[in-house]
Image 1 (cartoon, rainbow, N blue to C red):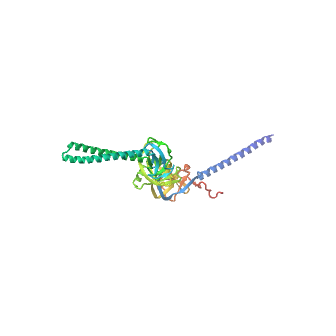
Image 2 (cartoon, rainbow, N blue to C red; image 1 turned 120 degrees about the vertical axis):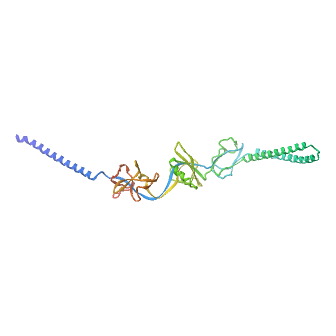
Length: 387
């Protein structure tokens, strides 16, 4: 009985010894794992890198603009009358002085004839009055008539001369009215949609006019830039030829025309903090159209042989801009001084040199001294990986 009672206790003792041995082994393994991680340190941060380069960098400013015609004229009748002819087709290119329309001129032709007849009548009266004045002068010398009669005749001559001047003015005014019946283009440009058809009576009070003629070539673009760019813009005023300007489509991808800066507005808009500029473009192909929205790029200078990094490589901190330079697979924080920057690149005047490697993506997990692992650019297969 004693031997049987001791057997369960022996089995439990053996199990307890095995459990302690297992826990000891597990503890030893955990210790080794912790020591291994402590020895290797935190994992390397995957980043994208680029090489600092040296090249010429043009300086530019970009803004959104609206295409404007340099001359846009609403052609209105200057006399009332029946519209007898339209001498253009809608959308036609027309030169300055070319015929656009005709208005019935018969009544005005009659006014011109009447004014000329009145002038001719008064010319005849003046001729007779001058002849009488000459005779009266001879009679006064012979004391055949009084001097008062001669003075009255002289006054009549002067009166007829004034009347003749008025007649000449009336003839000229009637001829001007007659010229208004032949409507010509005031500018060279493209004709728009006609507002009235032949056979209608047109009046000078018609607000919509007959048609609009808009100059297309050359053409202008009005655009705005932030007021912070004013010092760079003021430097452009010294260029008498005008700074070069490129007009792109609204998305900024396709170049439409290249022109020159025409003027800078004389004040800043206080509501938007921007200043307006106008540029002029040759537009023989008609790629720019009045009312069109475009992206405008204004050239403001150039940095020759500049040290260049991409704009995404430059970070901003409390102490100013900096980059992460990769040295021996570790990230080093390097403060930099920028001479020029836009949305795509930055010109570095101090801090890094051409040929050095800087981080272009993956900054969020980096700090000074972080180990880095250079990842392949997006779309590329890592070396050694299966295709």
